[in-house]
Length: 266
Ligand SMILES: [Zn+2]
Ligand SMILES: [Zn+2]
Image (tube, rainbow, N blue to C red):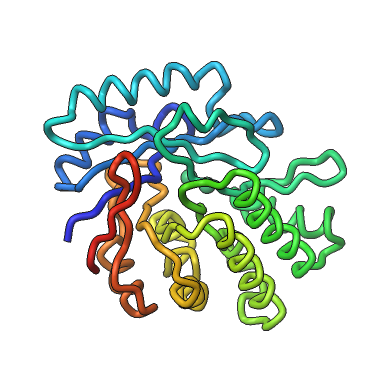
């Protein structure tokens, strides 16, 4: 089976490979297409994202290389838009909407960067209450979907990354399910994101299987994305993810074609 990846980070943000190196890798892997989604500018933390002044160069370079490689590989220009970013959607072929921070009391807490930072957020901003933190995060995911109306919702339950959250707690599960239903009203397409596996944090992609089953019941769509930060990882764990999707009851996954999404049989 051939795959595409729409969630690719390059040296324009916190990825290790250039745009060209990623395209070359996708061709070597016989992928269907490749989309770039470097991190949008977040004023509260500029350590990993593009600066506003980078946007033009990023767009120009991806478009120039898309033209150069058009006979070999369709290449698309996207962005991973954080909750705390403003972007001009029209600049990009597609938008992935993700939440990476909770800002409370003027402090910006990264929630998927290190376990320690996630614990600090829980302790300082939510008095140690994991469920309150989870409610806040998942409400933000749904709000982000409503405000941004993205093409794809990014790493829906990335809050589970460090296995700190009470994933088996019924109350936690209810919070995640409610948020998915709410987000779904504004975007029916979620990514299956394997980035936590390639970085050794998780055994399974985001979202968890019960959420994939809920998405299937809602009539949602899935794209398979690697959240790649290295050209070698563009299709990391994709075959396994396709199997997981079948287990969750999906018959197809979606692939971007430049204007919309085609469904490909699993
Ligand atoms: Zn992200
Ligand atoms: Zn990402």
